[in-house]
Image (cartoon, rainbow, N blue to C red; front, side):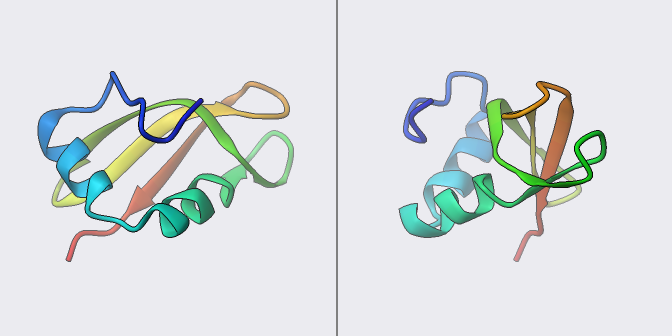
Length: 75
């Protein structure tokens, strides 16, 4: 999935995500903890929302396809 193709982002989440440099976005996506695999993985098929001023990415583990999430704290 291309980072630039994010149809399931809310408008505020998309704005926050796009304000992060592309190289940092890629590192954030490839450094997500999977409780099932018990190690870091890459998040796939993700969506984004703002929750309490934090950007919340919710998607699937690239390895086991289980649910994973990544919180990016607000400024």
